[in-house]
Image (cartoon, rainbow, N blue to C red):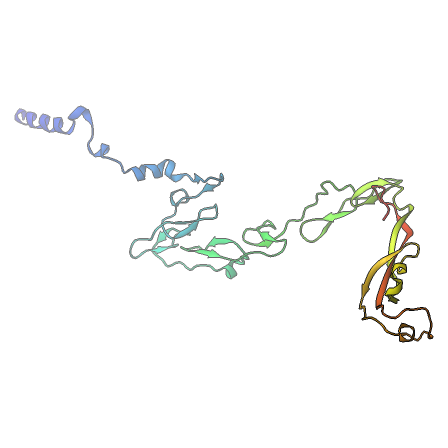
Length: 271
Protein backbone atom coordinates (compact mmCIF):
# COMPACT_ATOMS: atom_id res chain seq x y z
CA UNK A 1 0.00 0.00 0.00
CA UNK A 2 2.72 2.46 0.84
CA UNK A 3 4.54 1.90 -2.46
CA UNK A 4 1.75 3.84 -4.39
CA UNK A 5 2.05 6.95 -2.32
CA UNK A 6 5.00 8.48 -4.19
CA UNK A 7 3.14 8.04 -7.50
CA UNK A 8 -0.05 9.68 -6.19
CA UNK A 9 1.97 12.51 -4.73
CA UNK A 10 3.76 13.02 -8.04
CA UNK A 11 0.48 13.17 -10.03
CA UNK A 12 -1.03 15.64 -7.61
CA UNK A 13 2.04 17.82 -7.88
CA UNK A 14 1.76 17.95 -11.70
CA UNK A 15 -1.90 19.00 -11.54
CA UNK A 16 -1.22 21.73 -9.00
CA UNK A 17 2.18 23.03 -10.09
CA UNK A 18 3.01 26.61 -11.19
CA UNK A 19 1.57 28.16 -8.11
CA UNK A 20 -1.78 26.30 -8.36
CA UNK A 21 -2.82 27.98 -11.73
CA UNK A 22 -5.27 25.95 -13.84
CA UNK A 23 -3.97 26.19 -17.44
CA UNK A 24 -7.40 25.57 -19.05
CA UNK A 25 -9.01 28.31 -16.97
CA UNK A 26 -6.37 30.86 -17.95
CA UNK A 27 -6.34 30.28 -21.75
CA UNK A 28 -6.15 33.50 -23.79
CA UNK A 29 -9.58 35.11 -24.35
CA UNK A 30 -10.59 36.41 -27.79
CA UNK A 31 -10.63 40.24 -27.49
CA UNK A 32 -13.72 40.58 -29.68
CA UNK A 33 -15.59 38.14 -27.43
CA UNK A 34 -14.46 40.03 -24.37
CA UNK A 35 -15.58 43.31 -25.89
CA UNK A 36 -18.99 41.92 -26.72
CA UNK A 37 -19.50 41.17 -23.06
CA UNK A 38 -18.53 44.72 -22.12
CA UNK A 39 -18.40 47.80 -24.32
CA UNK A 40 -19.13 45.80 -27.52
CA UNK A 41 -22.70 45.20 -26.37
CA UNK A 42 -23.29 48.92 -26.00
CA UNK A 43 -24.50 51.24 -28.76
CA UNK A 44 -21.91 53.71 -30.06
CA UNK A 45 -22.59 57.46 -30.29
CA UNK A 46 -22.17 59.28 -33.62
CA UNK A 47 -21.13 62.90 -34.21
CA UNK A 48 -24.69 64.18 -33.80
CA UNK A 49 -25.13 62.49 -30.41
CA UNK A 50 -27.32 59.69 -31.75
CA UNK A 51 -26.74 56.24 -30.20
CA UNK A 52 -25.88 53.96 -33.10
CA UNK A 53 -27.03 50.38 -32.57
CA UNK A 54 -24.57 47.56 -33.32
CA UNK A 55 -25.15 43.89 -34.03
CA UNK A 56 -23.86 43.07 -30.55
CA UNK A 57 -25.93 45.70 -28.75
CA UNK A 58 -29.05 44.48 -30.57
CA UNK A 59 -28.31 40.78 -30.16
CA UNK A 60 -28.40 40.36 -33.95
CA UNK A 61 -26.80 37.35 -35.65
CA UNK A 62 -27.41 38.06 -39.31
CA UNK A 63 -28.90 40.21 -42.07
CA UNK A 64 -29.38 43.95 -42.25
CA UNK A 65 -30.89 46.07 -39.49
CA UNK A 66 -31.46 49.81 -38.90
CA UNK A 67 -28.82 51.40 -36.70
CA UNK A 68 -31.34 53.81 -35.17
CA UNK A 69 -29.60 56.86 -36.66
CA UNK A 70 -30.60 56.60 -40.30
CA UNK A 71 -28.00 54.03 -41.29
CA UNK A 72 -27.92 50.26 -41.86
CA UNK A 73 -25.83 47.61 -40.08
CA UNK A 74 -24.92 44.33 -41.82
CA UNK A 75 -24.69 41.50 -39.31
CA UNK A 76 -23.54 38.74 -41.68
CA UNK A 77 -25.13 35.38 -42.51
CA UNK A 78 -26.27 32.28 -40.65
CA UNK A 79 -24.54 28.92 -40.67
CA UNK A 80 -25.50 26.35 -43.32
CA UNK A 81 -29.01 24.98 -42.73
CA UNK A 82 -30.12 27.96 -40.65
CA UNK A 83 -32.39 30.86 -41.61
CA UNK A 84 -32.05 34.51 -40.69
CA UNK A 85 -35.11 35.67 -38.79
CA UNK A 86 -36.15 32.20 -37.61
CA UNK A 87 -35.88 33.23 -33.96
CA UNK A 88 -36.94 36.85 -34.46
CA UNK A 89 -35.58 39.65 -36.64
CA UNK A 90 -31.88 39.14 -37.43
CA UNK A 91 -31.66 35.98 -35.31
CA UNK A 92 -30.59 32.63 -36.77
CA UNK A 93 -32.71 29.50 -36.41
CA UNK A 94 -33.79 26.29 -38.05
CA UNK A 95 -37.09 27.37 -39.67
CA UNK A 96 -37.65 29.71 -42.64
CA UNK A 97 -38.78 33.28 -41.91
CA UNK A 98 -41.66 34.97 -43.77
CA UNK A 99 -40.84 38.68 -44.28
CA UNK A 100 -43.43 41.43 -43.94
CA UNK A 101 -44.01 44.16 -46.55
CA UNK A 102 -44.75 47.86 -46.08
CA UNK A 103 -48.32 47.19 -47.21
CA UNK A 104 -48.90 44.17 -44.99
CA UNK A 105 -47.60 46.07 -41.97
CA UNK A 106 -49.57 49.22 -42.87
CA UNK A 107 -46.43 51.37 -43.06
CA UNK A 108 -46.51 54.60 -45.11
CA UNK A 109 -42.95 55.85 -44.84
CA UNK A 110 -39.42 55.48 -43.53
CA UNK A 111 -37.22 52.40 -43.24
CA UNK A 112 -38.02 49.34 -41.16
CA UNK A 113 -36.89 45.72 -40.79
CA UNK A 114 -38.86 43.14 -42.76
CA UNK A 115 -38.84 40.95 -39.64
CA UNK A 116 -36.25 38.62 -41.10
CA UNK A 117 -33.02 39.91 -42.62
CA UNK A 118 -33.61 42.93 -44.84
CA UNK A 119 -34.49 46.64 -44.63
CA UNK A 120 -37.72 47.93 -46.20
CA UNK A 121 -38.01 51.45 -47.60
CA UNK A 122 -41.64 52.51 -47.27
CA UNK A 123 -41.49 55.92 -48.97
CA UNK A 124 -41.94 59.52 -47.85
CA UNK A 125 -44.78 61.79 -46.73
CA UNK A 126 -46.20 64.84 -48.48
CA UNK A 127 -47.38 68.30 -47.53
CA UNK A 128 -47.52 69.12 -43.83
CA UNK A 129 -47.30 65.46 -42.84
CA UNK A 130 -44.08 63.82 -41.68
CA UNK A 131 -43.09 60.25 -40.98
CA UNK A 132 -44.21 59.50 -37.44
CA UNK A 133 -45.58 63.05 -37.16
CA UNK A 134 -48.92 61.79 -35.91
CA UNK A 135 -47.29 59.76 -33.13
CA UNK A 136 -47.25 56.40 -34.94
CA UNK A 137 -43.92 55.00 -36.23
CA UNK A 138 -43.67 54.67 -40.03
CA UNK A 139 -47.07 56.31 -40.49
CA UNK A 140 -47.54 59.69 -42.16
CA UNK A 141 -49.23 62.23 -39.95
CA UNK A 142 -49.15 65.69 -38.47
CA UNK A 143 -49.46 66.74 -34.85
CA UNK A 144 -51.32 70.07 -34.83
CA UNK A 145 -50.03 72.78 -32.54
CA UNK A 146 -52.37 74.45 -30.07
CA UNK A 147 -49.87 77.23 -29.31
CA UNK A 148 -50.70 80.82 -30.24
CA UNK A 149 -47.05 81.87 -29.73
CA UNK A 150 -46.92 85.69 -30.18
CA UNK A 151 -50.54 86.03 -31.36
CA UNK A 152 -52.79 87.93 -28.95
CA UNK A 153 -56.07 87.34 -30.76
CA UNK A 154 -57.72 85.97 -33.86
CA UNK A 155 -56.78 82.68 -35.49
CA UNK A 156 -53.36 81.28 -36.46
CA UNK A 157 -52.29 78.21 -38.42
CA UNK A 158 -51.83 74.99 -36.44
CA UNK A 159 -49.15 73.65 -38.80
CA UNK A 160 -51.38 70.89 -40.14
CA UNK A 161 -53.80 72.80 -42.34
CA UNK A 162 -56.12 73.85 -39.51
CA UNK A 163 -56.30 76.86 -37.23
CA UNK A 164 -56.01 77.77 -33.55
CA UNK A 165 -58.41 80.30 -32.03
CA UNK A 166 -56.41 82.76 -29.96
CA UNK A 167 -59.39 84.64 -28.56
CA UNK A 168 -60.49 88.26 -28.79
CA UNK A 169 -59.37 91.60 -27.36
CA UNK A 170 -60.90 93.51 -24.46
CA UNK A 171 -63.48 96.28 -24.66
CA UNK A 172 -62.25 99.26 -26.62
CA UNK A 173 -59.62 97.23 -28.43
CA UNK A 174 -59.74 95.49 -31.80
CA UNK A 175 -57.81 92.55 -33.23
CA UNK A 176 -55.53 93.46 -36.13
CA UNK A 177 -52.96 91.03 -37.60
CA UNK A 178 -53.30 88.90 -34.44
CA UNK A 179 -52.48 91.85 -32.22
CA UNK A 180 -54.78 93.94 -29.99
CA UNK A 181 -54.93 97.62 -30.92
CA UNK A 182 -56.76 100.64 -29.58
CA UNK A 183 -60.29 101.33 -30.78
CA UNK A 184 -59.19 104.06 -33.22
CA UNK A 185 -58.64 101.28 -35.72
CA UNK A 186 -61.27 101.56 -38.40
CA UNK A 187 -61.83 105.29 -37.84
CA UNK A 188 -62.28 107.28 -41.02
CA UNK A 189 -59.26 108.86 -42.66
CA UNK A 190 -58.27 110.14 -46.09
CA UNK A 191 -55.80 108.43 -48.37
CA UNK A 192 -54.50 109.09 -51.88
CA UNK A 193 -56.20 107.16 -54.67
CA UNK A 194 -55.68 107.13 -58.41
CA UNK A 195 -57.60 106.05 -61.48
CA UNK A 196 -56.86 105.91 -65.20
CA UNK A 197 -59.01 108.08 -67.45
CA UNK A 198 -60.34 106.74 -70.74
CA UNK A 199 -57.75 107.00 -73.55
CA UNK A 200 -58.29 109.93 -75.97
CA UNK A 201 -56.77 110.99 -79.26
CA UNK A 202 -54.28 113.80 -78.74
CA UNK A 203 -52.61 115.87 -81.46
CA UNK A 204 -48.93 116.44 -80.77
CA UNK A 205 -49.24 120.13 -81.69
CA UNK A 206 -50.75 120.55 -78.21
CA UNK A 207 -48.68 117.93 -76.35
CA UNK A 208 -47.89 120.43 -73.59
CA UNK A 209 -51.54 120.46 -72.49
CA UNK A 210 -52.03 116.68 -72.44
CA UNK A 211 -53.01 115.60 -68.88
CA UNK A 212 -52.13 118.98 -67.35
CA UNK A 213 -55.50 119.44 -65.60
CA UNK A 214 -55.47 119.54 -61.81
CA UNK A 215 -54.57 116.19 -60.26
CA UNK A 216 -53.69 114.61 -63.60
CA UNK A 217 -50.47 113.28 -65.10
CA UNK A 218 -49.53 111.24 -68.14
CA UNK A 219 -49.98 107.49 -67.75
CA UNK A 220 -49.18 106.45 -71.32
CA UNK A 221 -48.80 107.84 -74.86
CA UNK A 222 -48.95 105.11 -77.50
CA UNK A 223 -49.89 104.36 -81.13
CA UNK A 224 -48.63 107.64 -82.53
CA UNK A 225 -49.18 108.13 -86.27
CA UNK A 226 -46.99 109.80 -88.87
CA UNK A 227 -47.35 113.52 -89.71
CA UNK A 228 -50.96 114.38 -90.62
CA UNK A 229 -51.26 116.69 -93.64
CA UNK A 230 -54.93 117.54 -93.00
CA UNK A 231 -55.58 117.10 -89.23
CA UNK A 232 -58.85 119.05 -89.19
CA UNK A 233 -60.65 116.46 -91.30
CA UNK A 234 -59.02 113.30 -89.89
CA UNK A 235 -61.48 112.95 -87.01
CA UNK A 236 -64.38 114.95 -88.47
CA UNK A 237 -63.41 118.50 -87.42
CA UNK A 238 -64.42 121.30 -89.81
CA UNK A 239 -61.79 122.88 -92.07
CA UNK A 240 -59.87 125.67 -90.41
CA UNK A 241 -60.23 124.07 -86.95
CA UNK A 242 -56.90 125.48 -85.86
CA UNK A 243 -54.83 122.28 -86.11
CA UNK A 244 -51.66 122.75 -88.10
CA UNK A 245 -50.58 120.09 -90.58
CA UNK A 246 -47.48 117.98 -89.92
CA UNK A 247 -48.09 116.79 -86.34
CA UNK A 248 -49.00 113.27 -85.11
CA UNK A 249 -52.06 111.77 -83.44
CA UNK A 250 -51.52 109.56 -80.34
CA UNK A 251 -53.62 107.52 -77.89
CA UNK A 252 -53.20 109.45 -74.64
CA UNK A 253 -54.17 108.04 -71.21
CA UNK A 254 -54.16 110.35 -68.18
CA UNK A 255 -53.79 109.30 -64.55
CA UNK A 256 -56.13 111.08 -62.14
CA UNK A 257 -54.94 111.36 -58.52
CA UNK A 258 -57.42 112.32 -55.80
CA UNK A 259 -58.23 111.96 -52.09
CA UNK A 260 -60.55 109.14 -51.05
CA UNK A 261 -61.85 107.64 -47.78
CA UNK A 262 -59.57 105.16 -46.01
CA UNK A 263 -59.35 103.04 -42.87
CA UNK A 264 -57.02 103.60 -39.91
CA UNK A 265 -54.81 100.65 -38.94
CA UNK A 266 -52.96 99.75 -35.72
CA UNK A 267 -49.82 101.64 -36.69
CA UNK A 268 -51.87 104.76 -37.47
CA UNK A 269 -51.54 104.38 -41.23
CA UNK A 270 -54.51 105.05 -43.49
CA UNK A 271 -55.16 102.36 -46.05
